[in-house]
Length: 260
Image 1 (cartoon, rainbow, N blue to C red):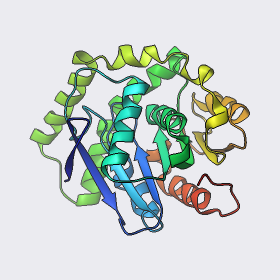
Image 2: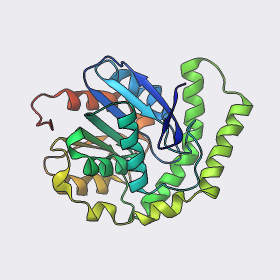
Image 3: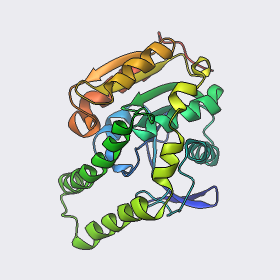
Image 4: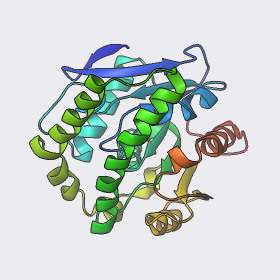
C-alpha cells in the first residue's frame, strides 16, 4: 500500500496500468476513501488508462490533519501530488465533494487538465446537499465493508472496523472539515467557467437530490454533457459498471476537443 509524502504529509495512493499513455486521477468524496473506486470502477478504467487514486487528508490511510479542508488547500494537495508523480497532463474525475475539488483544480491548472468528469458534486450553498454528504458517510462504511469482503473474500476484522469508525469520528469531531465546507458556500456561483476544459462530463443520479446542480452546471459550462445514471447520490456503489463504461467512452472519444 504505497504511502508517499506530499506537502510534508503522508498520502496513501494506488496506481493501476502505469504504462498507459493517458492518466485519469480519481478523487473521492468527503468521509469516504479511494476504495469507492478501487473495487469496481478503477479496474475497468485501467483497461484503457493509467489510473491514480489517493486518499484525501485524514481519509483512508492518509495522514490525519486537523485543518485545511477548504477547496484551495485540497486543490493545492492534488497539484502537489501530480507534481510528485511527475504527471503533467491528466484527466480528472471527482465524486461528491471530490467533484468540487476537481473543478477547483481545473480552474487552477487549466492547461494540465485534459478532460474533466464531475460526478454528483453538490452545491455547497444548499444545506440539504451538505447533509447528503453526512448521510452518505454513514452508508459508506457499510458498503466499504461489504465491498472489501466480496472482493478479497476475507471478512474485515473487528479491529479494522473499529479503526475506520475512529477515523470518521476524528473527521467529524476534531477537524475543521465542516466549517471549511461551509466556507465554500458560493464556490459554484463565483467560479469562472470560461477557463474549464472544453470537454466536461457531468454524471448525476436520476433521482439524486443533487441532480438540479448537475442540470445547472450544464448551462454554465460551455459544451458540458450531462448523463443521468439510475440511482441517487450513491451511484458509484449502485451502478459502478455503467459509470465506468460511460467515463471510458467519454475519455476515449477523439471527436471531443482536448486541451494540449
